[in-house]
Length: 255
Image (cartoon, rainbow, N blue to C red; front, side, top):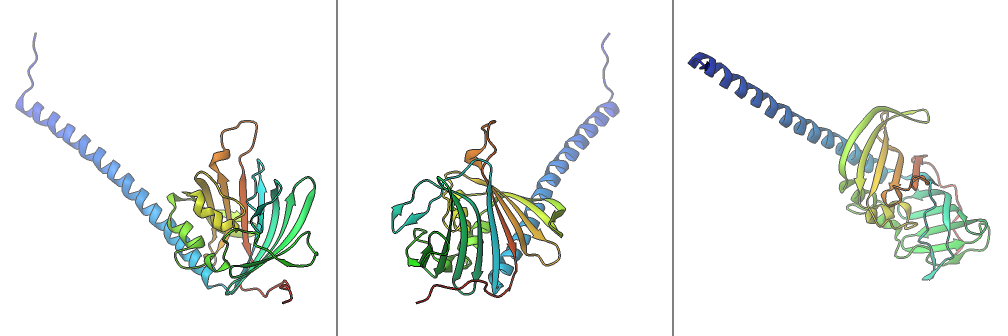
């Protein structure tokens, strides 16, 4: 026995199929719209935080590295240094172009050093407390580029991929912060760590921006080229921002 659909039944089926297709299209387009809106909101937060950093009279950075050791790109007057890894560093930037860094390295034994940069010139005290010598510790590094429009941190944040807000109430110490996730090109990120590293691959970036004042509180950078070994934790760099607009707490080298 054959069953034939009536014109009314046929119209109902066509209507249901059309409704299902339309709802599916709305769902897909809505998802794309929400994704684009989230990325725009994330970018707006990052842009505002960059503006705050560029406007600050000064700020401090605390840098630590966890996981698999990552080789440094530190040189002395063009001569490569012995293999070393950075354990931690404290830095202060002072407008317009001063930067002081105190770093703890792991070589055969732990060693400390101080670096003072003025524009594109650098002085080195190694180990810390030794007399200052004018030597280029970072190849082609210029403090002016760190906060320059279209360069440094602004360049990195303008060229992120897949940026999104993943938490609106993250905690950084006692601060409430937005937590953003994105991917960035390793070559650009090198400038955020003063040329200490030169990642060969993209990196994953987590940015924490304080809700109270919209400033960077913390950046966490995962070297994706070190991901995948189940026996080792990936290399991660943690850059904590503090003391915006504070007075200089270092003495530059005597002329």
